[in-house]
Image (cartoon, rainbow, N blue to C red; front, side, top):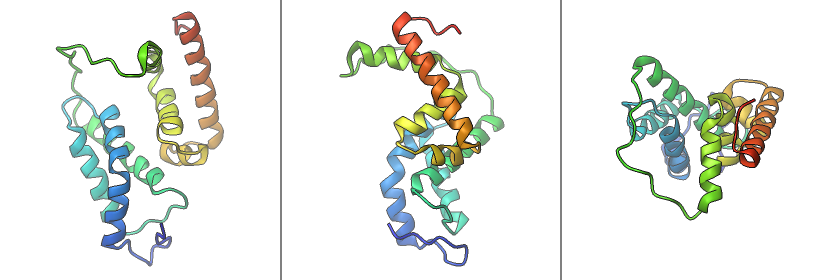
Length: 167
């Protein structure tokens, strides 16, 4: 996708629409996982794209999804700061997936990771971002991203083998 890379060139409506259509599902999925209680993920995803369009230019090198993930992360953090609510338990059991028991075990193991480790793994493997792009989204160094991912993978392996995430 030929995106403008300098501040002098604005992001055209057609380009913004193309990026939104291409990336909306991934942004919404991120917002679903990171929306604080009491906030609708669809609203947060829309806010992400509003901020993207209002910025007026796309200056990042690489995939637009990395830039959008950075915005989505900020939107979710801002929502969390504005309103801290308790999470509520679901009144039903989530349906099982085709992943089978091992997929459920992995989801449970991921849920036990600290937020910073889980987010690094989600961005790297769930969104397919490379380490540099994850670093940009999280605002940390590539070294820190690698360290988080390696720590997460070790903990996940331990949890899946032993069934215990205690360090």
